[in-house]
Image (cartoon, rainbow, N blue to C red):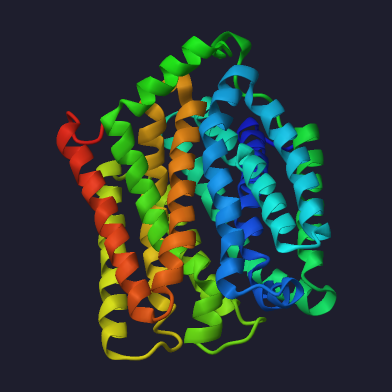
Length: 407
């Protein structure tokens, strides 16, 4: 291109790749957050209680987490691109099934099918970044993906509220089907394969089992993966409890979910931006330490405030935003450390890490949220307990790793 340097072309290619990978990752939050404003309407349609509707989150998240165990192995054997394309086709069909569901059991079935295939892009995308980019550049690209991805949960509930008001709850799942179809067309035409044939793993039972056993037996990988999952669960607890926070605690309406989601996602974007800026300038250990300081400060304020005062804007949502900054600041550094433990099985490593994160999110949605979301102090205590446990995992990892944070 006249007037365009080679570096500018590489920068544009990186931005296009980051946008596609972020779009694939947004299938998760879109599948969760977009339909939350429709809980009352869906409850009336299926004559279901809020607790029964809450299980539509678990019906999605638990299969999502379970299939995460296998997506990575498939990408290591067959390549990243084919697995992404098949996953998008299946997700499109499952979303249409949700839109046509005539009963709550049917909806739960198609939600489970959505969950089984929605994670392919998230797993393959994380591995692709490390396939293509080295060192600090990988952290910058992952931070860029996180920034773009971070906008989705802010947009999703607002869009869901509009769709609910204008067209009813079924239109939300039609939107998800259309979104997945557009992603399929973009990836089919623009997404190149990043894993050469020579580096692919044999798709056979014995080597697959050995690879799984190797990762499961790694204490350092388990600690890093647990730290990521627990940090995220501390924030996701509020996402899963959004209907209770908005309707019951803050006394807002179905088109006011932005009061919770926009500050939280703004925190994710700011934290990811800071992570990209610090890459190559500040060590991963110090970056993670900064992140935990921010998360602990947010959790402490959250608990102290709600021990004294009732829920109110902005004090109930501000700690979620601050916590999200710390969470997004730590995530790229810890994720890359986990992937680099197994350079020949990055897809599987990304798969297991994402599976654990999704499983913990499912527990937060299906078990913690129903019991803690009755009052703001319970949610604040849950956030504090989860981040404290995540910090303990990180601290243990630094103690048993020679040099502190080397893979």
